[in-house]
Length: 321
Image (tube, rainbow, N blue to C red; front, side, top):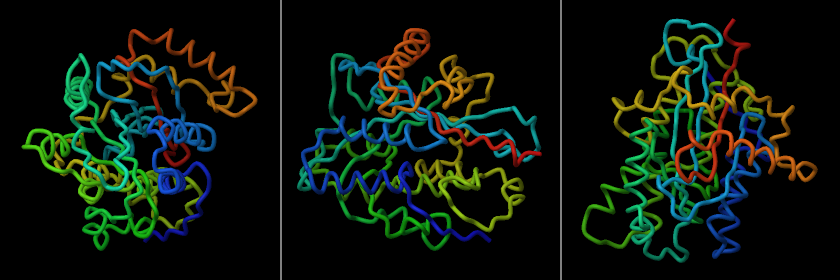
């Protein structure tokens, strides 16, 4: 039995999502890039579980994505049989951010954006499939609709209870849902509410990630640590299932440490505090030089035109003894 007493603080996805809601509500024409930059800055500065490396943007993106995100876990959490303590697995995501239209205008054109390389959403899905990454949209909006997915699951999965009344300005929605629901069909008016009700709020990410690390963001819990070891379907796979609704695809996005690209191996090996990767005022120039070095060193491995790489590191070796 697990009870949540959630303590909001800077750097949590609850706070970041709420701040995004308030920002858009008070400044409706704030730019999408500004929101993304702020989210990355806060996560990278105030969240000890997150590391971010940001690059200069390329307007002619070849892969249709803004960011690549990895969630690192010990393999012990994923498999029933205990694996060596240092054996790592990770889920891989490709994320495209979109700020929905103000005044609930038609969002149809947002998902039909193209450049000389093709339709952005098709590039996102094609390149993500090639790299075994989950193609995902992060939608920025001040829409107050409570997502149907959250309501439907509310009585069945206590994990999402803390989010039922949260203010959210960031919502996560499968790229395949948007593609097959709004891109391939005949032109329709796509309202903010239509997208939000099929999404899940970003605040849920805290609830999911806290199950892997008992002290994630000061969740104070009473928790049976052994229960997580008795099931193949961990909370993160439930989370992906919640997004995808096709459980047979879950392992498509799971990578073992032997499959990690060199740039991810580098990020894992770097101690965040020793290398000063956090972007506070005192080390901005140093951070810029590190990011430049990282990009130049690994550019041949990094998927074309990504704005950055993010890693949520939930390895918990203390609990694997």
